[in-house]
Length: 90
Ligand code: SF4
Ligand code: SF4
Image 1 (cartoon, rainbow, N blue to C red):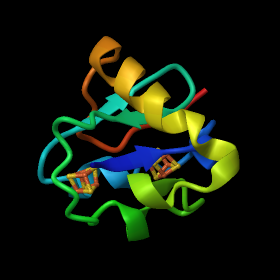
Image 2: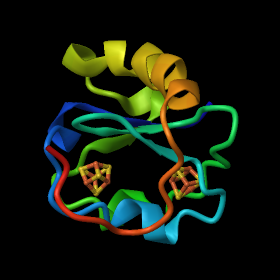
Image 3: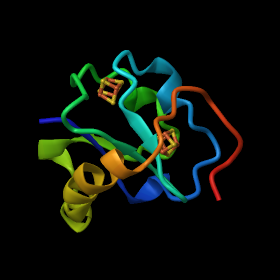
Image 4: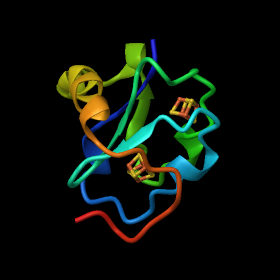
């Protein structure tokens, strides 16, 4: 189990989430971030740091966004790690 980044992350202007992650398990896609499910330790620290509320525990991902569970697993290993807050995502 793991936290999952979902649709509201698209075009995020904050990336506040990555700074608090003790496991450095956020990865930067072209327009959103992904959490590597094998690295996330379910600490929950990132959840309140995400202004658009894009991060959910895997079991609690809203139905329309369930595909994001597989997408995070697929994309995280393909994207660069991100551990510092940066300019808005495109
Ligand atoms: S805070 Fe992080 S997870 Fe939340 S929308 Fe922004 S980049 Fe995505
Ligand atoms: S739950 Fe904890 S370990 Fe998992 S992505 Fe969020 S801050 Fe990182």
